[in-house]
Length: 362
Image 1 (cartoon, rainbow, N blue to C red):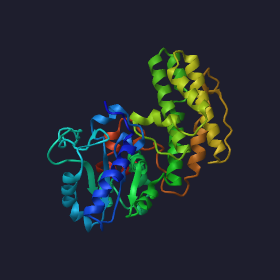
Image 2 (cartoon, helix red, strand yellow; image 1 turned 90 degrees about the vertical axis):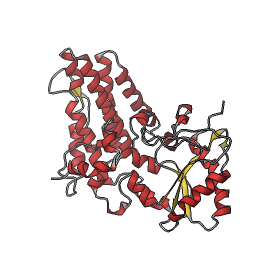
Image 3 (cartoon, one colour; image 1 turned 120 degrees about the vertical axis):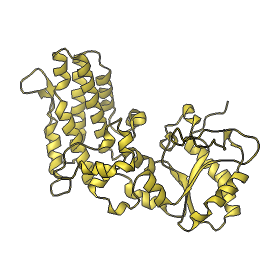
Image 4 (cartoon, rainbow, N blue to C red; image 1 turned 180 degrees about the horizontal axis):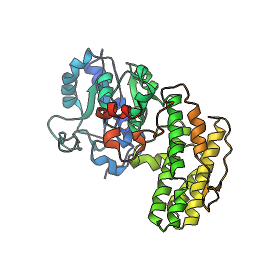
């Protein structure tokens, strides 16, 4: 059995050991950038043995100029003849795209014939337009940003560019993270959404709705986790990697621990105590970052009832004031569709961006 190698490391080594010497020999004057960005758990560093069954292996993207894209077929022809069948025990050859499964390709070991590698050759603008829906990042409005897929923003700013003769890192640096006011809008939105349900963890339980209590707790926990990403100036991945990425955030471990205890609690006392504590700890983090003026947050009773809250709406209102005079000032505090975990069919598709933008405009 082949020893597992992290896909990003495997691809980088494959490029420098095998692909670049071929390019240097047959296309010595070609100006290009190459690396591994975009789709894939390997780009995020979350791949494992299970990941190797499809769209994974020795692979890379190669970006060329508008003029040199005419060499695409010639480049593939040379690669198909010169690449080895395997690298570090992994197949360099891949099956034809399965058009009944979104064009997915699988490693396909061969011992003769031409190699069909998992190499993508494109111009950067065409790639960005198809993957993200836009390539001119200088003209993005605040609402445009909210229509972009957060997971895809993460995947474009993760991974690694191995060779950058076209200076594409400069272009990608423009989407390294949300602009300040977009970040503030998302922070205000998440606190507002928490505030809508802050009393329901206990209230649902009190009326005999244990499942409802658990679900509300989980929704609040997810919103708090999203706030942690925003406070760390880091994009959140989609749901498969959301919890894993959260564990790696540079925040205090007591925040992570309290959230963990809240979502695994089997009784209302532990559930309420820890989900409210989690809110208080995130509010403390908010204050420590001085995003707004200091907000006096404490755990208290909800209008005299036997329900504990921090009145999260105070945080939402304070942050929203920072949006005064901007395009987002009067937008509903709904966050982004990327923050709805199972909406990727809409949030990840550039085809829906115009309709998403309309959610925020009069």
